[in-house]
Length: 192
Image (tube, rainbow, N blue to C red; front, side):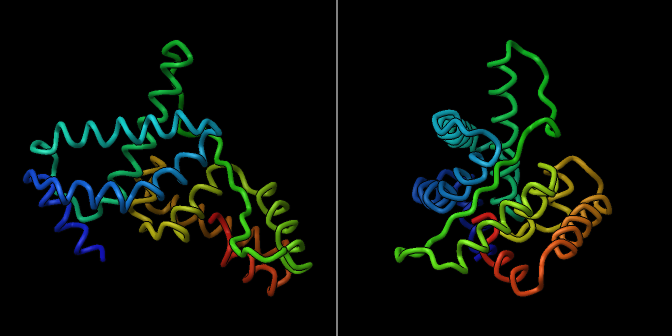
């Protein structure tokens, strides 16, 4: 699918409107979920996503090729959210480290939650309280969005080895504080 998205990105850059709509439909949900992890302001996130796609559409001819459109869009959205927060704070610089990262547990089954689900939810909340916002974001980017360590390091503005260390320490911290079966169940559902 990634190679297909690169082709779609290139067609979009060449002016293909259908490719633009595919990019929008493909990434709207992941961008929304990612943006909502930083701010609990739904309208701000939706506005930033809309502005991002308008800017992309207007500047498509000057966009560079990319090997990962998802990464490009996530980075662009994060920067737009930072800019919007700074603008709302009367031009005070907002550091990426100052952004919170909001992780919520979501049970995706229509049936009532079982006792096991309730236990996993409690453990999820305990784990989230152990991790700082940077650790939460790194884990989310790696395991939920499937970004590479190189992409994570660029998105978090840290070097490659720091990104690997951050994720390793986060996972170790989680493992140390949970029994193995809950760790696996939690990790499967984490950050959805």
